[in-house]
Amino acid sequence: MNGIARRIVWVSVFAITFAFVEASVVVYLRALYYPAGFEFPLRLVTLSHLQVELARETATLGMLVSVAALAGRVRWEQFGYFLVAFGVWDIFYYVWLKVALDWPSALTDWDVLFLLPLPWIGPVMAPVLISLVMIVCGVHLVKRLRAGKHFAPRLITWSLSIIATAVILYSFIHDVPATMQGADPQPYRYEFLGVGVILYIASFWTACMRPSQQPRVL
Image 1 (tube, rainbow, N blue to C red):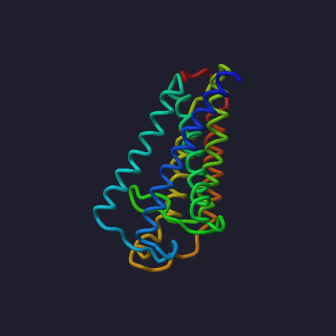
Image 2 (cartoon, helix red, strand yellow; image 1 turned 45 degrees about the horizontal axis):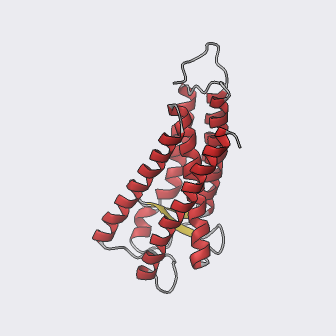
Image 3 (cartoon, helix red, strand yellow; image 1 turned 180 degrees about the horizontal axis):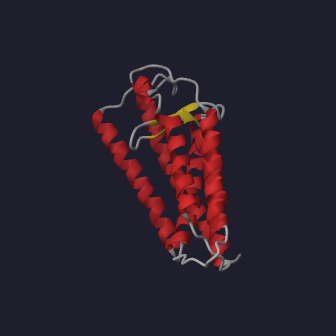
């Protein structure tokens, strides 16, 4: 096993095991707030629990960034490992929930996906699809840089990434006010998810294209 594969494996092992820790916390929260099983409309958690959850999600991001920083040599390689770590962690979070709670029953089941800066809600399919794209792009980025090839995000790259993030984020939070007041969520706008994923892929592709002048990658 070469050095790249070994690092990807160990980053993935960390993400898989850390996903179990995250899932176990949710198992306890659901036993507390949803003893009959998780479902919408949502039940609001106490302020003290919400503060802990916000801190936990921030710490989660910090841990994923840390392992990526240790695995990569330069910033874009570290970013590639972060994409891998985040994608594997997010997918296995649902794998472990399935093992522990036999949930979700389908990829169309709704979940509270994230809490920062506002609660994100949507079907499990959405984060799983995004995570798959992150893993593929992350592995490709690491291998590309280790092969001595360039990765140069340009204005078009950043523009597409920002638009993609805004579109997908809107699909998760546009119905949050009603949902947090005890209403059932409106049907998910899958077209926003599709557009966002396509824009992300296009953004990554533009950064991999060779410009007329060789840029500084580091």
